[in-house]
Length: 193
Length: 173
Image 1 (tube, rainbow over the protein chains, first blue to last red):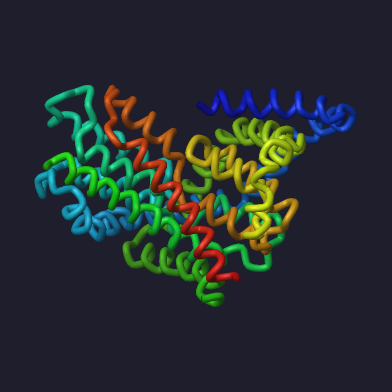
Image 2: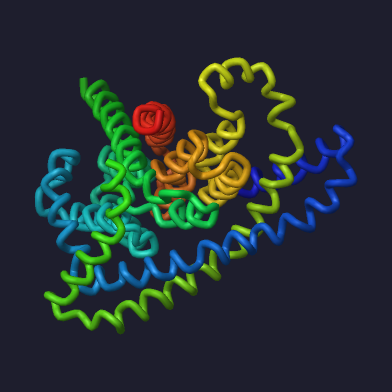
């Protein structure tokens, strides 16, 4: 999928520039394009590195477990098909907590573990269970408390207040997840009838 | 609200440091390990960022969107949004790097403190790469019949886009 997008961007970009007669600027643009990518990385790197450092302290202090415990009661309500002590719920909680704290690389293994646990009790191995679908909708909502890359990008473009979008992002995420879960719930109920 | 958003990061950093003290974490050691992971991560994502910035710049500068989505112009003009937000919303569920590259472009042209800059920043933060995540997680356990996961996931993304617009309008007018 990413493959297709990348290819299309280049093919469309080049062909259309030819078509509109911007051939000469295209040459410079291509050479500048790679440089712009490097600049972006260099500008974002300091904040990213700083933040992974701070979050490592949080991780070592056990904040992940604390957070997981906080979200667990909500998860019981969202996953009625899972037993209260189901191992999968623990992994799901850790996944959501790691995502919220911006520990993306820690989140994925928990998520994959959760899917594995859910699959063990799946009667039809090629078909997604209700819990799997709900979990992924929750996961793709992508609740992140501090969106580091966006902040770094806004800083590099000299924003007067880079972090002003944190609150709007959290609210928007909340809306998106809420409507996703609501539709999921309604579809599940419809199927049960 | 403005003050809150300005102090949220210092407060989080302070909170984590104090909590680390209380839990007797070796703060400095932990920070160094984390920072190193961050450096490695940056190098890992560097090639894809270069690739995506390169391709999206070519695409956006070619005027393709302006040309083919001209019919949408009046609509976008009445709500005061530049049309660049369209490809960003479109690629967001597929590739986080591609949408980041478009965000970079938007911030460069319109500035981070413009309405569009704030809207695009919120968009980037409010959802994850739905299609990529579904492919990764379902692929890992070889589930092929995914029910309504994709449909609902994309519906949630759409709601996120609409919510971003409404919320940014309310907060920043």
